[in-house]
Structures are given as structure tokens and as C-alpha cells.
Amino acid sequence: MNSRTKKIVKIIIPLLFGGGLVWYLFTIIPPKTLLEYFKNANYWWISLGLFFGILSHLSRAYRWKFMLEPMGYTPRFINSTLAVLIGYFVNLAIPRAGEVSRASVMANYENIPFEKGFGTIVAERIADLVMMFLIIGITLLIQFDFIIQLVKEKLDPIKIIIVLVACIIGGFFFYKYVRKSTKGLGLKIKKFIKSLVEGVTSIFRMKNKWPFIFHTVFIWIMYFVMNYLFFFSFEPTSDLSPVVALMVFVFGAFGIVIPSPGGMGTYHWLVIAALGIYGVNQYDAFSFANIAFFSIQIFCNIAFGLISIALLFLLNRNYVPKYSGLEEDKNSNHA
Image (cartoon, rainbow, N blue to C red; front, side, top):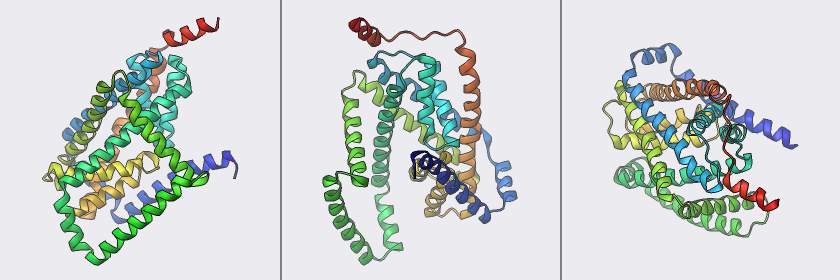
């Protein structure tokens, strides 16, 4: 299989996977019933939730400058914001292509070399990944007693012990395999872990590390607040606590991370599973997942993405980006 075929397969499989999951879910609940749920949703709460979602996008755009400035680039905040919004829009069509589009926008309109822009995006994604793991840890601590009780009720203690022992033994051999790998999957995992560690340590070496960390935390708080406010838009979830919302948020975040168009299908499945733990029936859980998903993707990411593409052209017709101070120094040295 050549590289071009691999790229096509990587695009098609997530689309088919996400679309297939959504199609199956629609066999569970009729579209007419789902439409009734949408009609009865409280769009005031949805609008308020989307406001906090937009704040997270603005914070992400502002955070980006802390990674670009040390390289000598000072893009306009509006261009950084539009690049972020376009990135979310592109991700809906082609999973993970949003990062490429962000770097391309800055290359075309701010003269920031693509590889440098893309490198900063990868670094910030590492920061987001670490933040997600922290939130998972916090959620497990808060819900520890509930999770233990749930496991006791649903699973045989002996089976749990067998699984834990198997995981420990398997984890040990997996660690040995990755550590000694010089090719294949093991080497890829080794490189990923190395880049993860390097990405985290590079944050603490940044000149503006505390503003960067503040915005990283702020972005994820806004994500959670947005998702929690969506609970109030839908009667079956309106009485659920912030702790439940946190668990659903974690499950939903995993759904977005799994490669599918904007989390289509995977987000629905995991949100249904999370709400099911707290007694929300499958119909109501699927309806809430759709209300949250389509509110974010259609009302926010698609609408703002299309507007951003238009604004990008309009606002940059006569704009000439500033030369990078670092690049000027390099050019003068070569001269």
C-alpha cells in the first residue's frame, strides 16, 4: 500500500466508522422522536453554553502567541482566532486535518513557516492531553467510592483481581517491548512518549509558562462549563449534579479524541454510556448527546468556521505581516 492510498484509507475509515455508529444509533430512536426533543430543548441554556465554548476558542488563539513569540513571530490575534475556528471546521470533514489547516492559514497570512506553526500546534496538543489526563484523575478521585460500588455490583471480585494481575503482567512485558524496540509499533510508541515528555518539559522552560498554563486550564474549564450548561437545556439531565457532568465530560472528551469527524458517533456512544451509569435511559441519553453534539458542531464550529473563512480574506486584503525579528537576525548574519 503506497502513501497516497494510506492517506485515503485514514480519511475514509473514520468517516465510515463515525457514520456507521450514528446510523446504528438512529435505528434505536426514530428521527421524529429526536426532532421532538430538539423542539423542546431550552436554547437559552444552549446559547449560554456556546458562549463559554467561544471563550475557550479565544483563549486557545491567545495562548498560541506564547509559543510563536519566542520564535520571533507576532501574528494578529484576529488571524490566530480565525485559524483556530477554521481548524475546528476542517476537523468535521477530515479528522485531525484541522491542525494542518491552522498551520497553513498562518503560513499564508502571517508568513510563519508551516513546519514551525505545525510544531507549536503539536506542542499545545500535548499540553491539552496532559490536562485531559489530570481531569480524568480528578474525576476518578471525586467518584472513587461510586466507581468502587459500581464495580462491586456489576463485576465479580475474583474476575477483577484476575484482570488487574493480567494488566500488571501485561504492562510489564509491554514496557520491556517498547523500551527495546528499534522499529515498528514499539518504536512509534517510544517516540510518542518521548515527544510527550519533551513537550511537557518545554512548557516549563517557556518564558511565559504561567500565562500559558493559565490559558490551558482556562480552556478546559470553559469546555466543562459549556457541557454542564447543556444539561439544563434538556429536562432529563437538568437535575444531574456537576459531578455527573464531569464524568460525562470525560467520556465525551474520549469520544472527541477518537479519530472520527468531529467525534461523530464515538462521542454519542460514550456519552450514552456515561449517562447510562447514572440511570438515564438510552433514548434520553442519545437525545442529549445529539443536542450537545449538534449545538457545538453546527451552531458553533460550522457557522463560525464558514464566517472565519470569509473574514480571513476580507480582513487580510491589505495586510502585510511583520517580519520576524529572529528571521531578520538570521538573514543579516548570512549576509
